[in-house]
Amino acid sequence: MKKKILPLLMLAFCACNKDLNLKPFDKLSPGNAFNTEADLQLYANSFYNMLPTGNDIIRGDVMSDYVAGKDVNNYIRENAYTAVNSSGWSWGDLRNVNYFLEHFGQAKITDEARRHFEGLARFFRAYFYFEKVKRFGDVPFYNKTLGIGDAELYKPRDKRTLVMDSVLADLNFACANIRDKKDNTASTITRAVALAFKSRVCLFEGTLRKYRADLNLPDAQKWLEEAAGAAEAVRKGGQYGLNMAGDSATWYRNLFISEAANSTEVMLAYVGNKSLRVFNDANWFYTSATYGNRASLTKTFTDTYLNADGSRFTDKPGFDTIHFDVEVQGRDKRLQQTIRMGKYTRDGVIAPPDFTYTYTGYQPLKFTLDSKATDGVAENWNSIPMIRYAEVLLNEAEAKVELGKLSVDDWNKTIKPLRQRAGIQKTDWPLTADPYLQQEYFPGISDPVILEIRRERGIELVLEGFRFADLIRWNAGKLLEKSYKGIYVPAMDQLIDLNGDNKPDVAFVKQTPATKVPGVYYFIIDNDQAKLSEGAKGNLIWLDNIDRKWEDYKYVYPIPYNETVLNPALEQNKGWK
Image (cartoon, rainbow, N blue to C red):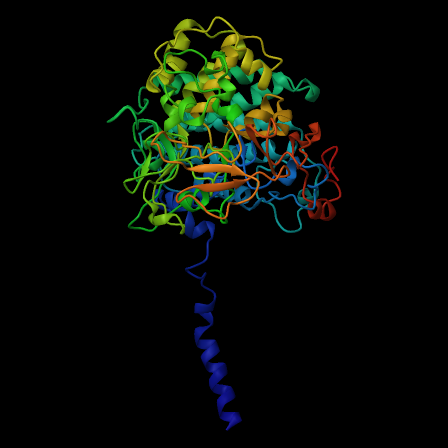
């Protein structure tokens, strides 16, 4: 029987030998992946996987100077973070882009389409390298795909100047060649989006080179000029504006809780979709006592919100001891659209700050939906902005003021509209430096306009993932050592109404009473994790029992330990173990 089977198998093999030489249809090769514009678009869609998810964005400011959480990040604790903990040294996305750039030219398409797709790929290569340089400083630069045995896989890091010059060249090509049609879904890279991103990159690099003199990096002015020019091009392009549709009390917050990205202002977003089950977990993250970080804003930061008349809240006598329900009234309208306060409701029920979920009393609502339906599941369907026109205005104003070129007219076209949308009445060019901003945040800055632009940036972009990078480029890492300061507590064991509805919401106690008042949360003051600044009264202070230590070597992350073992040519960032 075996003798009969063997010849049959040999015959079958010979008969199909020709077919076995065919390339499998499900495998990528230059011959079958780069022929038509549709092929290029399909491949280019993979680049979008580099962008942050909605969950990445809503967690972006967890490590910042204005957010308190359930613990202190190991990164800012002494000797708690090392190269063993580090991550982010991955290069697969870059290889994907470089492979495309090496092969897309064989497609039979128009020159315009060819330039568009090259611009798209170079945008994402610039995006990739900007994120790497922000995190690690000097990194190896590759503009070609590498094989397993390629010696360049194990080369040393290239200088930051070389890498960032390449980033700028890629962005300039992208801005000149990506198609200009506005995408009302905010889900694709267009020329305007590339310009907006270029303004972000160049502002970061220009201000870092200006304020980090220890790095001895050249051309700060060139980078700032590039930032200003890119942002101004977006503004003058007229495709975008600030959202001012509907009720002024929701102009700002609607940008963050709508299912469809707001096409007036949002330029690029993580687009949620309930029917397609494209979700984020903002409600669960911000309204869970266990799942999320219980991220809360600090009083020091909320004090920077101006009064509605344009005056500084911190100029008011006794501003630091005003009860919460009073201090939040009559302020910049973005405050009530960023934290729970006043008449805020959920499912039709008054919802004051809930100390089950907040440690400071300044409880965020910026990304959370007003229904409780998704509080315990990752099913938020709201779209989360990545790039907004508001950021572009801030980038233009800051770049120009750092160049010494911001005019009153520039101010009126950038910062003034943001404040007007926020209901602020006096929006004139500032003449005097705010002593509170100098004392609490920027002691080395005396220019009142720079201070006000930094105020505006902090407020407008709060919780959107910008703050840590801003501290890095401003040489202000020490701000991460600040105390997590909360609301003013007039006395221990006193029932406190947080929203002015004549119903008590919280009491600060040494121990929970035997008989509880319904609806009241009893916050334990143990004088360890939680204490009051004046003993039996004062501002709530959270986690001062845990030291925060900033060292200047932390301006860049360490290269992951395993990578330095694999490639001994990678010199570790100074100061890191």
